[in-house]
Amino acid sequence: MKHHKRPLNRSITVGCVLFILALCVLLSFANLTMYKNYVYEDYRNYIDDILNYTLSEIDGDDLKACIETGEESERYKKTLLFMDHMMDHFDDIHYFYAILPLNTEETGNVMSVLSAERYQDRYIDTEGNLYLGWISDDEFDAATAAQFFEIMKGKGIVYFEEATEWGIDYTGAVPIRDAKGNSVAVLAVDIDISFINGMVWQYAAVNILVILLAGAVFIAIFLFWSRRNITQPILRLEESAVGFADRSHGQRDVNALTFDAPPMKTDNEIKSLSDAVVKMTEDMRDYVTDIITAEKKAANMQELANRDALTGIRNKTAYDNEMKRVAVKLEDGIAQVGLAIVDLNFLKKINDTYGHDMGNIAIRKLSRMVCVIFDHSPVFRIGGDEFAVILRGTDFDHYGELEARFNAEMAALARDDSLPPWEKVSAAIGAAFYDPELDDGVDSLFKRADHVMYDRKKEMKATRKD
Image (cartoon, rainbow, N blue to C red; front, side):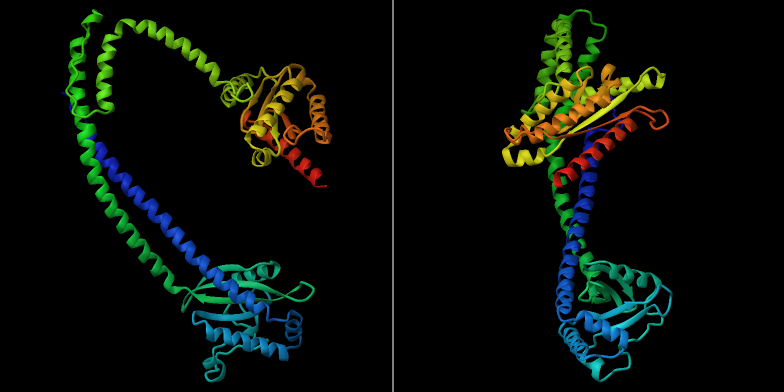
């Protein structure tokens, strides 16, 4: 009996352990990512509420005048008081402020416009308070100042994470605009999220432990089952098969080929395999006939495999095989190749609105039109709504006329209001012709043709909108 370097028992055990470990890593990463995204989404909603609520209290024109004059208006003071109340109400706000970026230098790059303070800092310990017109020294680096300039140009809220000497802040920032829509300053809130990483990793550790425990139980059960139902029956079948091979070596009498099936306690595929080996020895005399029959069936299946079931034209497999032959001819320098790509528009809309049967009608109609127009070239359906034409003969020489005919028929269908929507076929076409200076093979030729087709599709959509 042969001793294998990799016994099936050991391979199953190692594979099972590796699978559980990989599953553990994958599930842990997925759960960790989902949980972290959920936490951050919650904070983004929290920041959205704070910023949007505060923006509703800010008069952009009044704030702009305060920035230009350096004088605090009554509305300015009211806004500042509102922001102070927000600071007192939410304990996890580190900073709540409005600033105006001045430049992207390392110092003096940001001016304070509004700076909320808690009651203690505003009225008792006022040493660190910031006021209108205060210019930062080195509180903001050049990259942060540049980021604030970008936020000034934008419209919505921008979020970013920043490590500080006090921990980790999650910042949301949004431009403040005047009545004309011009950016006046940037309103930002920094939320303390220092505790999140610890919470996330704690969640991850529990999650990993649960998956490992479940995996260990699964491995034990699976290995017991696999030995009883797979490896031991296979081992007995191997012993019988090796004995059969030794007895049959050099045997010329087909009737002498007999296989002693091992006893099987399980009624599964392995027992079926054992029965099949027995049956195989009995069918040995019909082997040649079966091979001939199989070859004929294979030829028929090959023909079916190259045909698209819906349209009857050649499919993606046939296209790939044909392009391999074209590629060989191109390498030998004996072929001129043109490739046209046709893409059906609005198929999803037809399927969703009228049903897939109507969508199939549209696909078949477009297929017939392409085959009629390019009747000297092979046409392939290479995708759900995409066709390829390998241009040959007069189709290659007169492609421009055929493309114009195709577009004219598309336009005529679009104008024909007597047709139902799925009969008013709309499609874009584009073609490219092999150029050794532009193409390094049939793949680049396809990409160029596909690009031309999509340019045509964009043009048709633009015309339709108009």
